Length: 204
Image: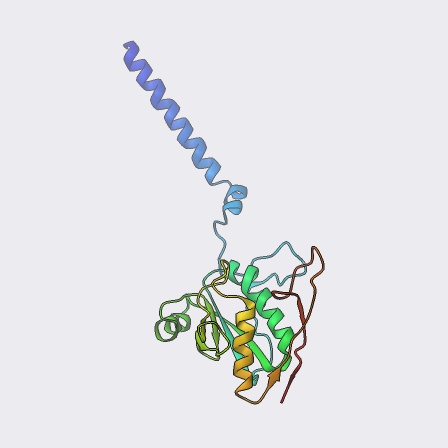
């Protein structure tokens, strides 16, 4: 056997060994778990924070009474949208407005969600509907309207914009809301821009 043939066989053997090791590493249960393989993105995964809902069914559970004056429908495509942005923000909104606001969640990957994307949102797969509409007429807004498309991770819209839209919806029903602001303590996570909001302070 020539030296070239021996060298070629050694190289092939090394490549096979490396490929085998890589396969075993990738299929290791611990490594698979770290990569999230086998985990349903809409499933009931646990959270490390005991203060937060740990099941997807809890994260997407409605908030507020069914007969509320304003219904907010949170559209989402991933658990992170709900857990990191929508649930905390809309929980704060619900606490501010009490019985006047209901929050519901809708996965736009479902048949119902796809229909909403097609018929209502103009293609947005995440965001918030205010009483069934994503684009809301709000006279106090800079452009006279606000679009609540996308999850507001990059300041597409803010919780202040959402409060303006809710206030306008309630005003049409003869309900006026006032919001008392107090300074945010250093290091504290604000419930809304500009300070913690106490309320709801809504009256007919």
